[in-house]
Length: 198
Length: 198
DNA sequence: GAATAATAGAGACTGCAGTCTGTAACTATT
DNA sequence: AATAGTTACAGACTGCAGTCTCTATTATTC
Image 1 (tube, helix red, strand yellow):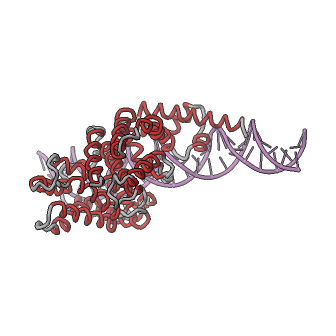
Image 2: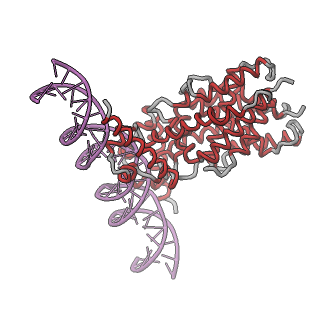
Image 3: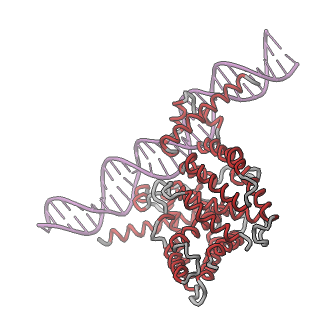
């Protein structure tokens, strides 16, 4: 149960790397599975043995996003700051990262695929680190009474997630021609103003 | 410039009606263009003469939504009320209509395909009645000083649209298992609170 | 009204994601 | 070590959206 498996993983890795490079170069829709397969000297059989769809290769890249949050953003959230300040910082760093490192085409592809009926979406996975990060922050915010007391932590998280989705959706729809970072700043300022206890 | 054109329009109508009925019956993805074409005794040539894609036929149905806004919601917006009250009412009636009459699966399909089309998406059509409705309301709101004076009407519309997209996206993602109407109420309450001049 | 242009439509064809069947190389079992 | 089971992979094949070319009929121009 080893040598064969390892060769398999090597093939998978090779496909991921090649595919992601090609997608980045020319866009998801302009890269065919046949091309990926040819460039990696593998086959359709190999490809679909490791991935259920062309989209699924993207999920690999997408998981980097949450990992980045955990590794690089959360440690920067200085606990001297108020929860609202920390949320603002988190959202700002998050959107900057997505805009600069992930790009609208990858985001678009993920948002499209998550809606497609076939497989159950990663966005709804309750174990996604993102949800945990936000929930902990919001919980602290409700305890601190930073938020109006009619909102529970869970409700605040839901609101923020909805807003995030909307911004990222529209940014993808506009093919990056609106500024994710600017739009995010405006929307979350309003939302956090609306949540803040007076 | 007449008889031929009329026959063309009749064909187009026949295709729309048949297609929408089939989509409703078995879902967008389970209906093929070949089937539509066969059932209407037309051809691929006819179909793609009238529509640029299969999705475009589907959008016809979605356009009803905007028509509904114009015909049934806008007239209810009593101008005695403040702009914020009118916006709240508009959003409430809108989401009720989408939840009850359009349904999450149609919404999901639209949201998915708006991201995927090569052609420019209906959502970005600046002539969509929705944008005009919202803009006029928000413009009045800024003139009235109902909103904090740092926001232009255009910015307020953008915020509302982002929020709407996020809510509808998540509702579709959850396959209607969250209440569109409830989530909408919570989110827009916060946003309008955040926008309101003190 | 003859000649020319325009276009609704027919249907064969292409491109590509995803499936299906087969196989060779490996692993597990006895 | 012989046999049976497993799996990474190959590549032919299918299904379907969308394109291309061609035609027949209607509109326009002189």
